[in-house]
Length: 346
Ligand SMILES: Nc1ncnc2c1ncn2[C@@H]1O[C@H](COP(=O)(O)OP(=O)(O)OP(=O)(O)O)[C@@H](O)[C@H]1O
Ligand SMILES: [Mg+2]
Image (tube, rainbow, N blue to C red; front, side, top):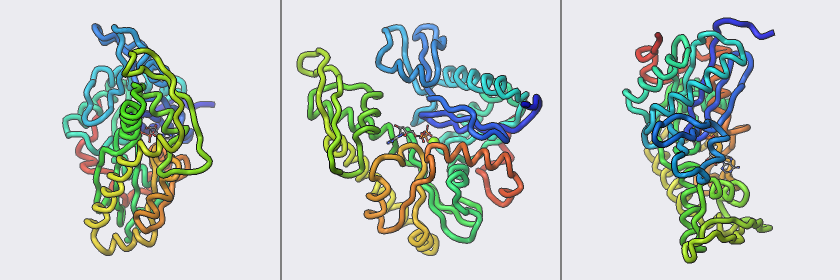
């Protein structure tokens, strides 16, 4: 029987997907971080996967937005309504009253944005918020031993961004946030379809092509799919047959740029840590780490082992679950800075 009372919960505030974990239960909630709303009144019509499905299909008076998308939080009002309904659903369903929330915050936020997001959570009914750095929780969820005096590298490739971190002795020794991620790949596919096929396609269609046909480099046998969009020439709907080579070609440029970012990052990493990473390899996480062939391509281009974590889109959430279940095991890990100072409660 569920215990009604105070407990710890965790939230991975992804730009694409938001996950919530409950102590002892694991990941209990995963929904697109997406809101459909009435443009004039900004009242929310739908949130989550349903809202994502409406993208590009709404009438004029309705918009769909991902409120946590980079570069900065654009729509605090929508974000707040979305988070409020998600948290309330989870607290009710799992009968958790006024929990403490471990919140995996994106590292790119300004102090004011961090503060606003944490206050949003308190408004939604949590007792207090403990901010933790999402790179640290991702590494914990990917089972990297980041407490050792040994360099470990995690690259979390999500929707709107990629977090690149090197850890040693429980701290981030070096980190960087890059704009590479699923959104950039989707945009490259939309651009390719416009240039090569005179076809305008929506974000969801581009994402579907990436997942179904896309790869980091060409592969055989080819896969193909018909995609519908609006012809740039006639302005009317038109179907075009595309194959995996097309989509892979569309992804070349962003992937090439990303490889350069990783190269520069390693070059600027202190030599002892870089040599540890050269031995131990790079751990990829985040949903975009699932791109077919990315692991092999990066291993080849970086000249070191590259691995993909199990269920890579869940590493941050699993790291949070691990943290709230075994807090003592992570006493020596710096969970994010500043940590204690910006804990917010009501
Ligand atoms: N099989 C797949 N191949 C390629 N990309 C995929 C695949 N599955 C999911 N993705 C992409 O993963 C991205 C979402 O990843 P994830 O859930 O880690 O993002 P997020 O945590 O919400 O974002 P961020 O960490 O940037 O805030 C989406 O862009 C999605 O298209
Ligand atoms: Mg993420």
